[in-house]
Length: 298
Ligand code: ADP
Ligand code: ZN
Image (cartoon, rainbow, N blue to C red; front, side):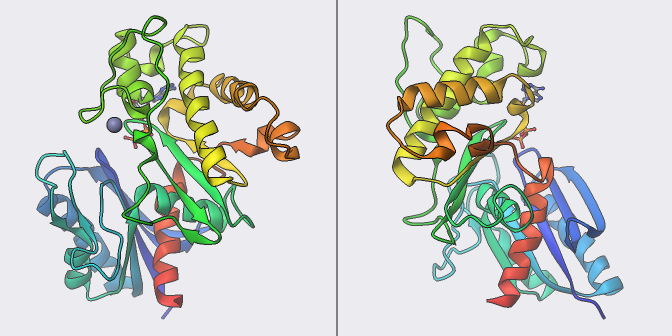
């Protein structure tokens, strides 16, 4: 029997579950809204139980919204921990899945797992140090450093870095419940909606929202570049569907760096240095399958 892998992309608004071995071999996929933990995780388990009967599953990989505990040596490994999302605090996500299916489970942040997908099959192939940033309902970043997924103390929280905020040019206070005007508070989809009074997808390309948005994202990327020295930064998420944004961000990154980092990647090839995800919107669920594979192979 072929051994397939199960992947869960667990977002705050929806779950995507898939079974397969890679981008060209997905044999089943479902998506459903994120409701209460028992119900939502239960739906995922039911799907994988069926698949396990039909084709056999070797392992499950989970990329989850958070904060999470991704440390396999910790007693709360696989938990969603301090999330403000109602009902989801201290939920033993990986444990529930592993016990129900009796399978090994890999578990990490949604963005680390998406980074893994991009590393395996997407825009980060062959790199050992890169960042994957998503700009959507929230902002989050993950990636690899020297070939290993970023963890450290807990895991990175790149969405909550602090940026210079010129209150005269932009008096908006920000929407982060913890920090107000952190990166996510200023530049997430909900921040755009709150600042401009309309959903981000309805703001026309010539709206002043976009140069301001590009400035915040560029400030964030410059901090990430100067701190981690990534070989590439992949930027995805719903807000990046605004087509003009990539070039605005690239220009501002070059201008903010002021020629200081003498790498051709930044000076001459910024289009591939600041890049959209190679897997489009599929980095997360494919990364979860890559994580499941890695659990078996390690
Ligand atoms: P999530 O972060 O929940 O996984 P997405 O990455 O799809 O979801 O991001 C959703 C956010 O993207 C919403 O805040 C929405 O307003 C914004 N968005 C969706 N389409 C566009 C668009 N074409 N231009 C700008 N923003 C968009
Ligand atoms: Zn914050």
